[in-house]
Length: 211
Image 1 (cartoon, rainbow, N blue to C red):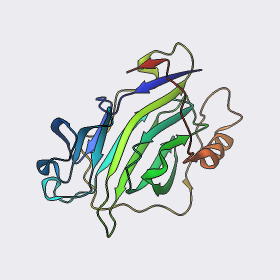
Image 2: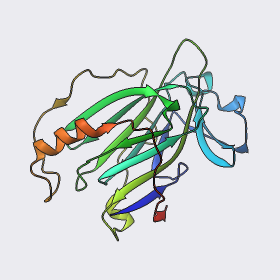
Image 3: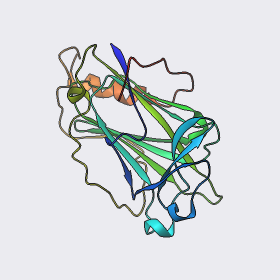
Image 4: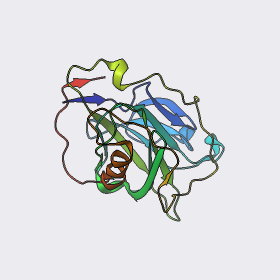
């Protein structure tokens, strides 16, 4: 297996309602309120949002990434303090959970590598001002995989306008799908996805390649 780093500014990542083109700053620009902005924080590049705002028609900010990997990790900044909802969909199975983005590192493990997984991260508005800072992503994939095998052509629209977001309390699954030849079965693989798709504080090992 090898680690692949996906930069948070990669065109493979879709930011809704918009990604502001104001870059190179260390503070949020008022013209970007309601969307996402690229900032430099402590020498690191982050993509940040302060939640719904007038420039984004008060749409709840979300980000989407489609990929094929056995595991995914992504980071948030030490000052990020917004509550986030994270949804992972693989095949016919979706799971969701919520956490404070100050967790630092999110780990989603035991994914079916032969299926396309969609990660959705949603800002959860609260009663006090908060912000969500997204760092880079790491995929754990089979060694020597080509980019087209773990980053399929995105099928999501340029923006997805959702008025709100709710976290399902239970897993909903319809029909089984076969994840990979190494998995015992589709059903057992999806149970692992439920058990292991969780937020795990800690460090992420260095990636072998960066995209």
